[in-house]
Image 1 (cartoon, one colour):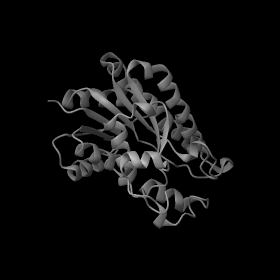
Image 2: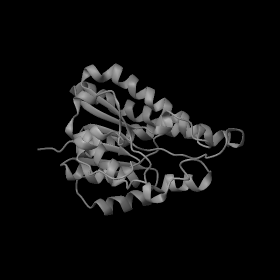
Image 3: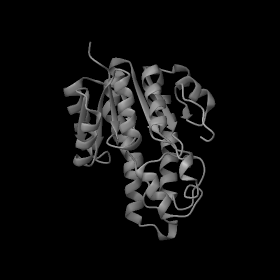
Length: 253
């Protein structure tokens, strides 16, 4: 029996890599994409599974994204789930000081990348009458973080895009979720913490979550099919979600 395929953008490290590992453990095959060939090679070796397909892809480039999905499907079958994990935080700067091109580039990746990925997989999902899309959201979608104007704006856009996806495709068998992973110990966040003094930078490093925890949530959302949560933004801070996923409690989330 063919294993269902999850396509994970930004899958070479951090939450994306651990989500791939979790889904492999749940009996899925995974396609992981990233811009760095070296990072993909390392991730593929780390995962060490014949059910992994690694492909270089720039999510901000519509053709690159489309071709990546086509190649993954040719190798492992139709995409049953899309995890839109690729994203950047830079530029971290106050608005008057931010590099204008870098600011717009972030939107191309964080928002345009999700649009491109969804356009690549939605026709097949609609034709088959089923599919799952998980968009990585953030608390920054709902509250400003000084120095993070581009990132906050992008995540606010993603939150509404997720609702739009559900409104348009939820009744056609495509289950859509936003997911807030919390403050996670990733290279992206650690770099941002060092760049600007704000509440995130002042968090105790011991309070940052290991990427394996949000990855378990993503794996559960994709594989377990919480239909009653479709169209909602799920958060690792939600005790009900943690209970359903089976995460052990800790002092801080």
